Image 1 (cartoon, helix red, strand yellow):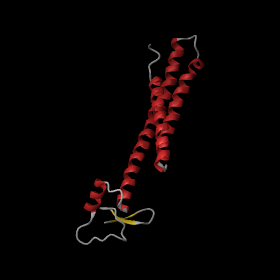
Image 2 (image 1 turned 30 degrees about the vertical axis):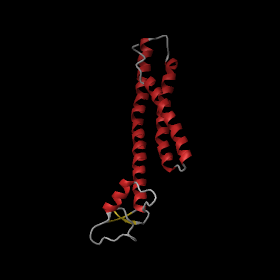
Image 3 (image 1 turned 90 degrees about the vertical axis):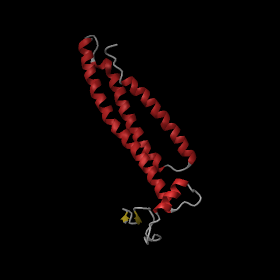
Image 4 (image 1 turned 180 degrees about the vertical axis):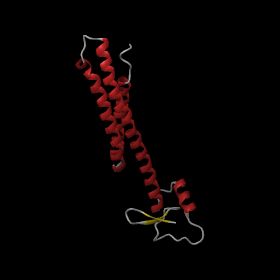
Length: 162
């Protein structure tokens, strides 16, 4: 019932107790650890509780990173779509050349770069320590995400048919 971590430490996969202080005689103390996690006994957190919280934190930031990383696929597709729309617009409006619509490509590429940057903010946030730093960082990232979503909404508008 033990797992060997990459770092070389062994721990019980049921209750996350270190093997040095953990004995599997009779019933495992996994229920006790779960109760500690649920009750949030912060003053007397065991290593297992601390590890459990770190794992939850890692899972959250990892999921956020992966979700934003996956959104890059859509942003890249939008860049290709904008190129096609510009080619179509050049045919519909022969007085305008492709360079007249270059700003649309710039916007699509900016959305791509911003999405990539936002994805990596979750990596930085995972390692950031200090409550004030975390609060300030969260404020900045939230503002960045809000601006990114506004820009992305404008980027996805159908500007040819209006």
